[in-house]
Length: 233
Length: 141
Image (cartoon, rainbow over all chains, first blue to last red; front, top):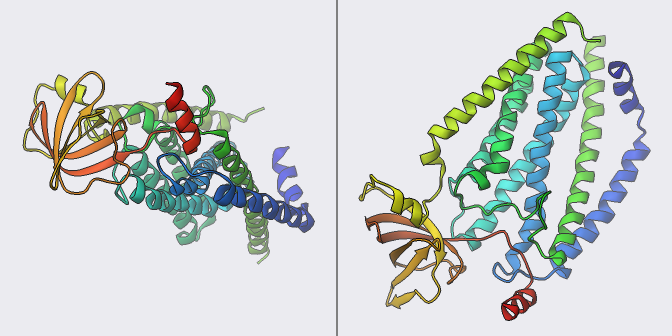
């Protein structure tokens, strides 16, 4: 059922919808950036470098969630043979990789003025680098292996194995002593970020999710069209 | 609803995921010593076999009123509110180094109570707030 409806539905999502999303993104990100860079106060210890957080935290969260989707799509693809899931995962991968990289780079830029170093091998930072490597491995599998079935199997395998890394990233700051601070946001307790900083963070988060959705829809359409063309040949 | 083949694949997946979790858990457990980025003073205190000339990191809070600066040397106490270690360091500390805040020192233990550091990192906690709010909080305390 799902198999038949979904891919064609997505193809018929008009470009108008994507254009609408682009406009929405521009508005949300403009407000978010203005708030994050100018209106929100500096931190009582970090000073102005707290503003890096408004990009760093959403990027990290999105790159983690995207890999969770890739893992889930890989399971559905391998176990239930839902073919379009491989296109979902394939279209998500570059997006997640970019966000993982942004997270690492912004974290490094923040680490120098705060911790005093660009890079440390603590559990959080290292496991995030491992996530980036999983993304690269996943993307390379599709790029280097020409046989579709084979690439599909190997990449799904990478997607499922990579799932084990996600709880390690998330809980590394609670399980072990790390230089990286624990989460300021959690489902069970009040945020430890003052609301004047929490609001721009949430706006930026929403803006970056819309961006991800746009890129995903564009890439997914391209992947489906590419696959259909390759079948016609 | 599910075909026979899909069912067996699902079973295989569940079994491998479960064994994967167990394997990951065992590996992480055995690597624990290397996964922690630093030891707290209490962990050092409870350790029975400490290699004194091995480079390690210790971390905790800089005890209020404990910093003594003499020329380029700075001495301070790292505490986890249960145990304390005196740290001696020659060089510049990060801007965010301050009393009552988190710190990590990299270097060698002289003994369980004295540490010679050759690198100091400031640790930031999960609290974010504007300076005015922190002033109000300080006053109300």
